[in-house]
Image 1: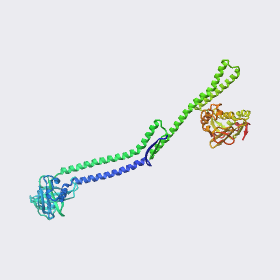
Image 2: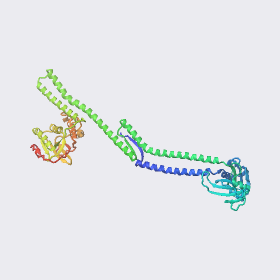
Image 3: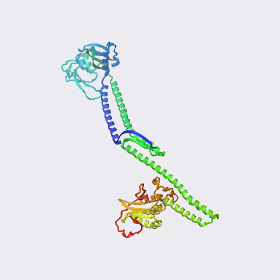
Image 4: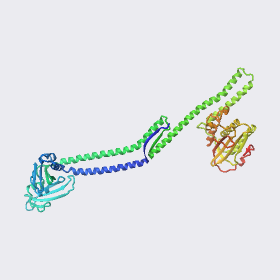
Length: 551
């Protein structure tokens, strides 16, 4: 069963590109935040110096049916007063504490608007004739915290308020007492004067407000707003960082969680699980690597299970194959010992045959165990496989000839050098030839051909006997597997398994072909890597064996 750990489905791309893209968005938002903070700070600096109470009072008067019902103290504070002037400067309404009740056009011009601040500096000087003069300088600005001055005007007056010099009113000769109060701002302790426009019943008026000077409130208002701006900026910045971190975390958390769950399953023995993820390339590669590992673990587990099954089968096979001759030997020996046998020679011969068979089985089991030892070292040497095969078949030819068998060879005269363990490789040939002699009848033919293909030596060994059933072809090289029931009585089923291990130990491979070349019914193909060496004359080492039938 394949477990699937589903991850987030997003467009595939580099994780670095994802970080860069989110960082660009973060930077853009940070720039917007900085611009907003700068704007709010500037606006706060401007607004905190403006007395909006007078403006709000003007709005209240404009909307009121009866001016007396408007509670002006709510807007400009206690101890204040209000004067409303028409366009000619005539007082049409007065309420509360008003140090000046009538205004000239010049005095109206001297009154700062609600969004203006006037800083008045007065000092006294004595002229050469001993007369005292007043120097009055007025600086107009919209921000009490800024050194920038929008405009300024200067007046020089004598003690009777006669104008000696004026930049504001060059033609003016004298200031009245009320005008002097407006000019100097001296209305009493902490009293300021402000004006703003007012429209009543479609007509334009000027609203003049006398109120206590409250610089502390303006400063507190600015500081309070500044604190709010700073706090808001910090909160916004932290939120941006959290959002940015969250976006990156989501990109990382999904595959990491999937990997964690998958690894947890692997630790519990659930191999073969696949992670389905399509996101940043780096994580896709990690998940793909895990999937490969998980699949290999599953295959390894299957191989281990197959190995355990094979070991169990091997133990069972060994016990079965050893039990039969041992039982016969014990039974016959007991019968002879008890004097129950008349023809002891026959029984002793059977015991000898079974003991020889037992020795052969033990030798095969030993060889199989030796070939599967991890520390096994083969005695590898360079061999001309053509010459080696000729010599081997020359030794087996008389046996074949006596039993009426035939030998067909196709071995080249050229040298094909390979690296093998000669003594162990001999068992490969022995197993195949012995099976041929055991299971193929008289007049059958054993075939052997050999050639070099690229860097491989290809050896073909086969016969035209009854062949091997298709159902056992895929497992013929497994331990204790025998070709058919007719062959089951004669061997341990380890011969071909040992042959495969020997060939592989020499760096080659052996297979049983599914479709043998005609006229063969059984065909084994052995491939060995060709060993490259310096050219030398080997003709002196080659001898004509003079046996068999060359193809």
